Length: 473
Picture 1 (spheres, one colour):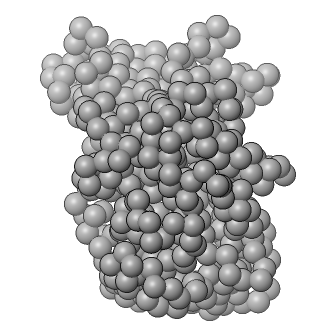
Picture 2 (cartoon, rainbow, N blue to C red):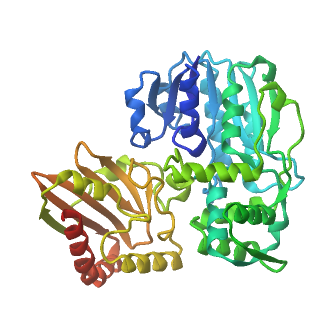
Picture 3 (cartoon, one colour):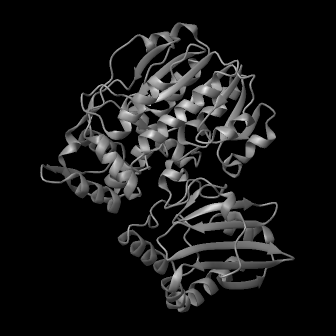
């Protein structure tokens, strides 16, 4: 079939595409910014990338009409605006309107389990989207998933941060909330096996793992898999705001996402039994198995997607990388340095491994201090790290930077700062004629921005000189 995948740069969408290609389908990936599409797609004749935004109906004509099936994988946990629900509704309405003009006969929507009588704002919104997607022109299948566990998923990474950093936890009472976690590979199995299956047309199914666990049990079982001894005491006095700050300062999550997660974690996510496991021949893994398999992927450096690379983890970059590719010059302050290099390949490898566990090659303690300061002022800090130790693509998170452009053939890496700043900042590495050129550009906002630049200038001289020297060695 010819299949449309929305949310193709997201955590699930990015993992789903290879499964569909493996099943010999032709895939059309819809992205809001083509720079964020996986580079490997350009080499596969079975994958087509189109740029469209379902909040802008005029862009949807880029999507071909001859599609047979579509996956609706769009949602946002990070949007804290008051009109969040209306935006999601408009997105669903525009999707449905356009799909009804195509030959598509089946739509598969991945939602969240919504069986509790009290729902968070985001779960309530997903439930509304489900009703909006129903149509007389195509069949709708809805899968409602529990907490998704897999390498790079937000829940997995947050639990990992808590378990590996805190031997003893004084935790909020929502840790006693019950849920049914499901492995990401089981979610992908449901999604791929559902394609075109007429048995499940116009039906809704909860999909979940075989166990009902509290978040506390999930933390403790995670610790056991990691062979760590952890102690957790829950207290009834931690407010949602305090809980959000607790997650924000201890884990790599943004404050907006922490707030959304805390609101959702107070809701029991227990699935309703059905015959869907038998219909699609899926035997869900236990939570321990899911965690163990996730660490196998991490150890093999084969994480396909991570929530940190999504705009959910972004400071303020709203999925429009093209806007930041052309580094401005007018009204900007810059720190430019260059060094001759003897071995281009070695220098390129160093540049492509920068940040994360590798660090910044010089003055790493100063980078860490800057990360702590950023965190204290509501920024994202350094805790996001990077998804892959030696691979970079446009859209990837890199500590408190976002990769805007990454091309080894062009010998260029461009980063945009997502830390809290009185202005905007770019960091560029480029090799031309055996010369490494390193440019830090800052576009200040008002007097505060200029004062900030000149106050950190002495540190820049120390850090940036040391960094380029190490890269050019």
